[in-house]
Length: 541
Image (tube, rainbow, N blue to C red; front, side, top):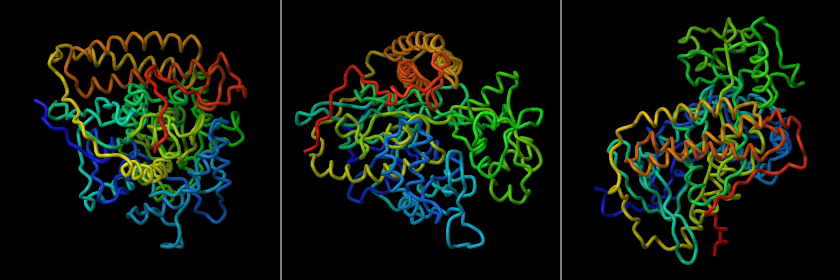
C-alpha cells in the first residue's frame, strides 16, 4: 500500500551533489526542503572530483582571461553572456564555500593568506583552487555536515525518482512533484512540491567505460525530456583522457592537475606524442588529448598510454596528490618512480536540460542545476574545473527565482494520485534488465564514442530504438526496481545523444565524425531537441 497522503515540500531537490546541497543550504529556514539521494547522501560525482574549482583569485588573472579560455575550449558554441555571468560569480562562491567550512589548500609559504592555485588543460593561468587532490570530497562532506544546522531540510536517502508529475494550474502547465521509489522497501511514494529542482548529475554510465560512479544514469535529463522539456547539446560527451588502466581500478581518475603540474603522456617506448597534435601538448583541452590518445592506441594496437610525473621530487608528488598516490600504491603503481597506465573514459555530459540564467526549464516550477542542465557555459567542450563552478553559481542564481516563485504561487491544493501497481507483477526475468544494460553500454562505447561515423551512428540508433521498445514493454508489465528505472533513463538519454550526433554534420569540440572531419562555421549553433509534448513556457506573473 502507498501512503494515503503525499508528503508536501516547498522545494523538492532531486540529487545531493554540490549543486543540490548548496541550494538546500542556501534556502532560508522558513522554506521546507526535501533532499533526495539515490544512494547514501554523499555518493555521487562530486565526491570523486579530484582537481578543483576554477575561479579568478590570483593577482595575475582576470575575468576576461577566464572568459576567453572558456570560450576557446567551448569550440564556438558557448553562450558568452552565460560564461561571463558564471565567471563573475566564481570568486564569491569560493568565498561562500570557505565560510561553510571547506578547507582549501593554502599557498606556501604564505600559510593562512591565499589559496594554492593550480593550472589545468585549457587554462592560460593558475586559477584552480583545490583541497589537495580530493576537492570534491572536501566540498561534499563539508556541505553534508552543514545540513545538521538546517532542520528545514528533510533528507530522503536511497530513493530514486521514477518520473515527474505535471498538470495544469491557473492556466499554466507546471510540475507538481515527483514519484519516488524507496529502494529499500520497494514502495513508490508520491511527493508534492511547489518547486522541483533536478540536480541529478550527468549520464556517463551510458558508456561501458566511465570515470563516473554507478549513479550517473541521466535520470534528470530523461525525466525532464519525458515531461516535455527541451534538451541541448547532447552530442558533446567529454571523455577524460586519463583514467587509470587497471581491472581493479574500475573508474579511478588520474586528475587533470597531474598534467597541469608537469605530467607527460608517453607511448610504450617512452616517447612523447602530444606535441604532434597540439602546440599546448599535455595542456590542450580534454577533447584534443582524448582523441590523440585514442588515435595512438588504435594506430599502434596498444591497450593504454602512460602518464609520467616521476621527474618531480617525490615529496612534491606526495604533497600535491596524496589521494591519487595512495590509491595507485594500493594497486601496485608508484607514481613517484614510474609512469601510470591510462586510457580515456566517459566523464562529463556537456549537454542537458535547457535552462535560462535562473535555472528555469520549459516547465513552470521545474529547475535544473549542475551537470543535468544545459546552460550554454560549456559549449562543445567543458574546460577543466568549470563543472563544480557551474554547480555553485547556478544554485545561487536559482535561489532568487525559486524564492520569487514561492512568493507568487499558492501552495499546492491537489494531492498527487497514488502510484498504481494494480496491473503489474513481480518480474521473473531480471536477466533481461542486466542483458539490456550491457548491450546498451557496449554499443554506445563502440558506435557513439570518441570517434564516430554516419554508419556507426545509424547502427546505434537502430539498436537503441529496439531496446527502448523492449524496455518500455517490460516497464509496463512489471514492478519498478532501481535497475529498471536506471536502464529506462539510460536508453532515453542514449537516444538523445545519438539523434543529436546525427544532426551535427561536422566535427567540433567533443563531437568528431570521420565522415565530416572539418569544422563548419555555418553550424555554429547548439543542437536543441524538442519533445513531442513540448509546450512553450509562459512568462511568470
